[in-house]
Length: 354
Image 1 (spheres, helix red, strand yellow):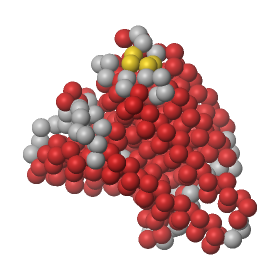
Image 2: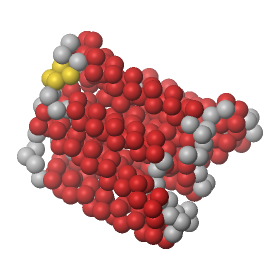
Image 3: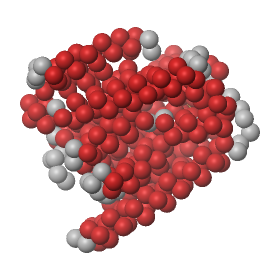
Image 4: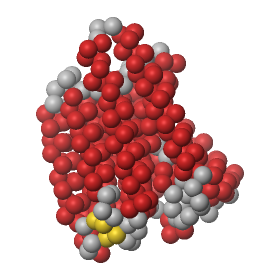
C-alpha cells in the first residue's frame, strides 16, 4: 500500500495541468492517478478512527465512510449534470466488487493455497443482502417504463425506494453492531488484528480525513471536467467510463486489500470486503445520491437501463452462490473474472443512450 502513495506526486501535476492548460488528456490522467492514493488515505484514516472509537462507533464509521471516495466523485458528477456517468458508476462499483475483485481474490488466493475455506455463516448474510439490494434498486427501473412519461410519479417511486433501502441499511448496521464482538464483523464493522488500521492519533486521522476529502473533491472536479474530451478522443462512451473506469479509479486501494488478505488465506475478510463494499454502494451510496441530487438541483432517479439491471442481478446471484458452500478455489475466481470481462466488452459496444 505504501507504493500507492507515490502516486500522490500526480496531485501537484494535475493542479499544474489545470492551471497552465496542459490539455484535458493530461488533466484526466493525472487526476485519475492522484485519486487512487487519496482514496486509500481516506480509507486508512477511517480505519484509524474506527480503532480509536471502539467497535460500535468504529463500525458505524466504516459503514458510513467506507465508500466516501465513490460518493464524492459521483456528487461532483451530479453537480456537472452527468447523470449517465453517475448511474453507470453505481452499477460499475457493484459489478467490480462482486465479479472482478472477488474473482481476483479467489483466483490468486486459490493458486497460492489451493481450496480455501471461510465461515459460511459470516458470509451468507452478506450474500443474501446483496441479492436483495440488487432487486430493490432494480424495481424502479422495471416499473418506470410503465409509469413514464409521468416524471413526477417516476421521481416519487425512486424517492420512496431510496428511503426504504436506506432504512434497510440502517437496520443492517444495527443488527451487525448488536452481534457479539468478534475478530470479524460484516460491513467492515470491526477490523481484524491481521489487517489493523494505521496507528494514528485521533487528531492525525481527522486531519488526514479532511485533507483527503478536500483533495478528492478537487481531483474529482478535474476528472469530470475533462471527461468529454477524453471520451471523444478515445471513442469511449460516458457510460463505459462510468461503469468500468471510474469504479476502478475510486476503489483501487480497497480492491488491493481484498486481494492481499486472500493471498494470506484470510478469505472471511476478503469476501467481507468485496460483498460489504457492494452493499454500501447499493444500500447507502445509491439511495443517498437520490436525495443529494434534489438539493443540487439535478434530480436523479433509480432508473437503470436493461443491461445494467441484468448484469447487477446476475452478479449478485453469482456472488451469493460462491458464498454458499464455505469454500472457494481458483477456477471459481477465473469464472467470475471471465464474466466481468465479457460484460466489459459488451458495455464497450453499448450505445451511449440505451
